[in-house]
Length: 532
Ligand SMILES: Cc1cc2nc3c(=O)[nH]c(=O)nc-3n(C[C@H](O)[C@H](O)[C@H](O)COP(=O)(O)OP(=O)(O)OC[C@H]3O[C@@H](n4cnc5c(N)ncnc54)[C@H](O)[C@@H]3O)c2cc1C
Image 1 (cartoon, rainbow, N blue to C red):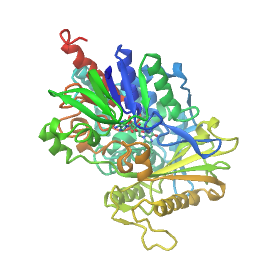
Image 2 (image 1 turned 60 degrees about the horizontal axis):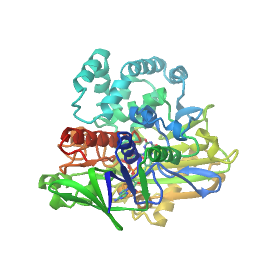
Image 3 (image 1 turned 180 degrees about the vertical axis):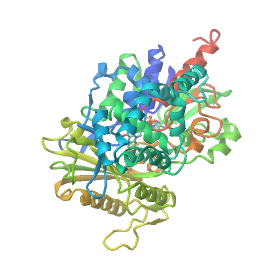
Image 4 (image 1 turned 135 degrees about the horizontal axis):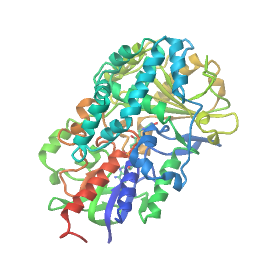
């Protein structure tokens, strides 16, 4: 029988961060990963076309670049190098206009002023506030909730530096905030488009949080990508772990957690049982842990009732293309953006979001697009492009908002080959309308729908990318269910380390770090009589 201090189930970014922190503390750690490669939704591959490296899932890592925990791992010493596109982000309007987030804030402000005089100053004022309080806001957002240690000090500091007003703005609906701050559509859509990375409606409280956070991080740390592909971020974390004695076991799925007298004591896989001296950290979704890896018999009944109300975020369809040349955007910004958001207007984004909420496949989907060759030339043959676009669709499809429209193929929501083709055509038509000639540049295509995404990473249930809705009712002390918000679970020595835990989706490693620190803390306070 194998025995170790800790088992980490799942090698997504949260699992790998957790394993690294435990190994740093001198614990022996085994990471179990059911796939035959590490990294969860942080991976890249070249299966779309030879010489083109596509990020299989996530691509841009402002949250990782800003995360004190990931920065502290010093992954650059383990092979990670960051690359940046000439500009951070472009918002493409339907009429050939663009809003652009440049790497230099003065350039962003000047372009926003051209769109609507005054918006440049409003943008610079926002950046000034972030300079003063951004680090504290980030620390607050990424720490366990409610903050116990250091929480009061942080709050005092925020009050002094004007951070409270920024927090209030983050709690606002993205529409009201951007309409109050800015006069022009370019500035408004830079924030609203970023809000579209979470699944909170633009008119709902809290949607401004992701919009402001990503826009301001974009302006300060940029939207960096790992040189050579997203997988390089994961392999750097694995390398670091292994230099500290940690072990990664690929192709080994955790089947269950053994609980004895209320404490997690072992993890079962198909071929062995691994006894743990100290802790089990689960980088799996909350529904996969509670009532899955840990049977309900070992959990309090109130948790079962609360988990019945757990809500997934919407599903996703992602298309990857290999292109023979860059996307021929109309009115393309001189400095090519790595990330492009595609929506005619805020109203159109609102409608697409409402359609998803109502169970309809959007007729004019909001697109998040990545131009990976522009961001990192090492990923493509000279002159080529590795492009992706994804959009959200309902978890349970009740219809297609485009049904009956001439020339548009209906999506039925089975997400079989026919549905995926129809959805990819809809996305391509949107891009073609903004970049005439785009289709002619396609040399290869891959479509990943809800089934494919979940098969490649079991945490992406039904194509959900954020471990559960980011809605306020499932955040902070309500994540993943009311009364949580910290990594501890009702089982001693078992910690939830995935994006289903506070603070949720995104590659910041905070869920893993919070779980590792909780494991270390609980072990320490049991000393000295339980030292092994
Ligand atoms: C298409 C897409 C685009 C995204 N874009 C971005 C982006 O650009 N920037 C960003 O910051 N975030 C992005 N995200 C979100 C981000 O990737 C996730 O929030 C993040 O990966 C969550 O990390 P995690 O460690 O919690 O889980 P995951 O990354 O999902 O990893 C979980 C791991 O656990 C493994 N596992 C599950 N069950 C078991 C088991 N029983 N036994 C063993 N192993 C198991 C899985 O195989 C997987 O490897 C995107 C996500 C997707 C899907």
